[in-house]
Image (cartoon, rainbow, N blue to C red; front, side, top):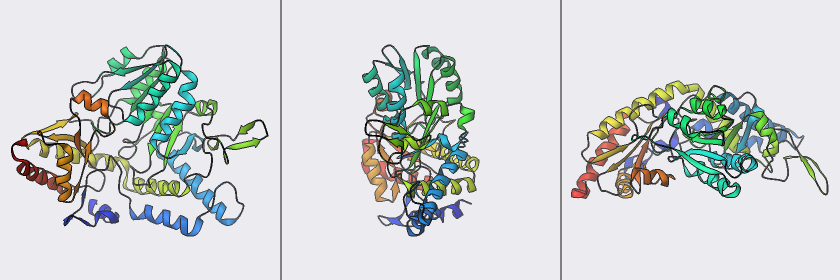
Length: 406
């Protein structure tokens, strides 16, 4: 089955520096299957037009494709209605929308925003800015030695002063899957809302926003086989209806006068200007592709591959692996002795292997780990055990190249 899946990704069938490509940087962005590439190409060739405006045939086709993609996103994460799906440029834009439109209007001096130290900068800096602007206080759920969090610590930290809990469903460094459903229950008992960063969860596991009970959920298309520059925000309808748009202009208005204007209904009041139409079409095609394979099958494949990778890497002397060994997606973050991760990544690239090296947009977490940076191998539905074996073999050669550094 994996061989058939790999055949559908043109970029994988090439050599890098004289070696067959092994792509292990999926947490940064995934590769695109031919059906997604074709869907975007077909849109530009046959349907290209602005949406919601023209009454001509191309305008109708484009609008149907765009709104059809919204319906697919809603079904994919089990939203109650497509009205609750706001198209954005990605997770970062979605989280900033919640921070700017919702959080700044409800937070004040003495109120609390609860986070973890392992959040991606996109789910940290917006809340820092809210705290600076409103006088709210940031509080951090303590991390356990393996990078997990305990529900009892959340219970102890969230209070009646808490207005918002913001947490990644899955850590982009540790691969940890957080108990977001239980955290949502705790937040709601105290009258707070929960914002879930779904950038690393949506591509790899079945997501049900109604079951989680989250108030907001943000996702990026480019990490789940869709084009870059497209994502979505899910929000509970009452919250979205009460929020004000933060971008103003064409498309999001109902009536415009000389001195005041009124907004369209959901979801369009948050989508000012010409939207990312081709990106939405590509996202819809990516969802079709993933659902045909099955999210349960994708999750099981990655879980086995991550376990295999951790076992193989553990065999190497001098390797430090960060994060838990269980309840995680296909992300393995490590360091190889005293060799700088950038040097590790450079040597691997010379052998056609693409990994990520750096702080992964998680500088507070790097400080908690007491390192400046790490190497990260992240897997997706098209990766194989052979890819892991190539990685391990290249790391052995890296150790030999740097000699005593390990």
